Amino acid sequence: MTKTYCFADKRIVVHSIYEEVHTYCREYETDGPADFDVVTSSEDIEYERISSKKSAEAEGRAFGNPSDAYLEELAVYRKIAEKMPFYDTMLFHGSCIAVDGEGYLFTAPSGTGKSTHARLWMECFPGRAEYINDDKPLIKINREEGSIVYGTPYDGKHRLSSRQSVPLKAIGIIERSMDNHTDRLTADEIRRYYPRLLQQMYRPKDYAALTRSVNLLDGMLLTTPVYRICCNMEKDAAKVAFEAMKS
Image (spheres, rainbow, N blue to C red):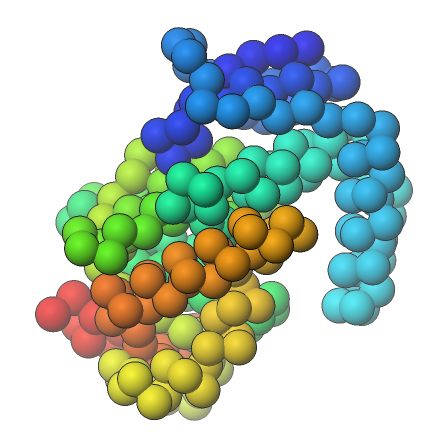
């Protein structure tokens, strides 16, 4: 099956084996000339099966038996992420909330609580906050004008996202703590966190795409304030973080 979708202002023609890929992405369907094509194969599906199993084992999770259709959804997004760096855009593993039309991107290793923290923002700022993407947003980097965060259908198990884009106001690195405090990181502190941030960025297998992705990450960090959010996952954590990051 073949349909065209718009992700991060790029039109992408997706040629799939299974219908489920298009059901998953239906809200992003568009028309017009394509920027690039994505084609999946049975080999791509098997690659995702092996990769998912390794990730589950590394994190101590049960692997289960995902369907080929589900694995093809992963393959499609991986192929998109491989090409996006050539359009100054990268996939970043994080949860993005917009408040008053500006994006706040939370990142942390799996299980730390970034989605929980994002949910606290939604509870604290009703009518002002909305999800952009709770798992794998696309981020377009411009060193002069700043970064833009885009919603995608690849938005985590709870399917929390919206088909919109917002300027990236700040990045928050989530850490568990007994009390709530948020501090802006200095350049030296960002360097110490850099390996962790690099790990959260999708790292393409293609060398040229990987090089561009690292340059994009550097550009994002140069133009966007980065904060350490130490929080206890209670409601006040969101208020403390927002007050520090909005200025």
